Image 1: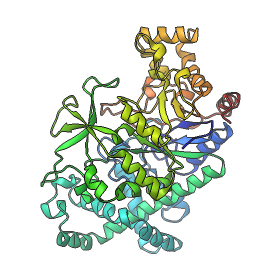
Image 2 (image 1 turned 180 degrees about the vertical axis):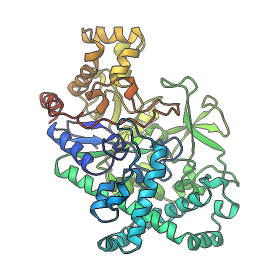
Image 3 (image 1 turned 90 degrees about the vertical axis):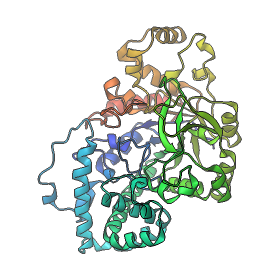
Length: 501
């Protein structure tokens, strides 16, 4: 896949402003699309859209296929008659700058339950045909996810491998009884998923009409506590009790001296190969229903992955194990054609990873914040002159500090290297836009920058600190009024002068 010379902005939908404590797929999302179009941006990049659990990370979702109910626009449900004015009478005291996921779990779950109850009582009958079609078209993942979610509620939130053996091991008789017992609950879960996909599809079409494509993010691994792991147990390394024998992570690197212990179950690639990689084909097929371009997080795991024995306290004591990424991607291409994939090839990248990426013509990534470390930084692969055309360049990503924060906290050697390279001495106030300009002026076909860098925000507004579970992770929101016509004009001018419009 080759992307034409263009640019975009990284912003997760939870970071949109709005009255209900978290970004939603309604008026504020459309306003953001309008702002992108006015700035002549071709892409809006988002993080994974799945339903989040403990820790609230979009990279640890209860399903690789489902959507996040927190994003459903409640104003739209009110317009459709599924919610009434009195439902909004006593709104909690939402923070306009931070998401309180615990509050969302309680309050929004109640609002969505109310919307479903109105539908079940005969409200919005015009949705019936579309809902029936959705249930049929998405049954391959939706049936398992709805039962998983209903069982999880019934089991007090326990992970699936702590359920009683009949449920844990999916014994047919036990599952049949659960489906009958929880029929109303599973139908509610399916209806809420229908609402999410209905709204997301409308937003994506709105963006497409304005020349804005969506770059979506899929984590290479699924969460341990997910319907994917529960319903496809044979495809992962589990013991008879549903405990993983090995888990995923990365070795020590730039982000962490002890590596990152993610804890995701690891794929049994031999089993997936025997099944013709059907699960991966369906996963990419599902992603293409959501996104125009798919960024695969931790792409190197398709060539080889860091296997950590379970249990473990850190990711230090692991080993590299080869994967069947080439065979899998070939099967996906045969089934779906030339899928537009961006390969997140950061971290420990070896020749086999580069070969896998290049054999399929996939653009990799470069992060300019990484370009100025080390002694002889002139050979750094992330310096602008070392970038390739078929590549995506970022000032920073969701896992980095904001660029302003990076400059404030950078080693003196890194600041020195930047000054030498640019023959300039930027201030904290001017650095972020200087890095944005550097990304746009590079030869990489696609330049993407986090909205925090366009707003020139500091470390307190970063999205995530890898290896931590701090209360600030994933919670940042921009404020209504931040996206001014003047800022759009500044970005539009940069886009036009660098040939990205």
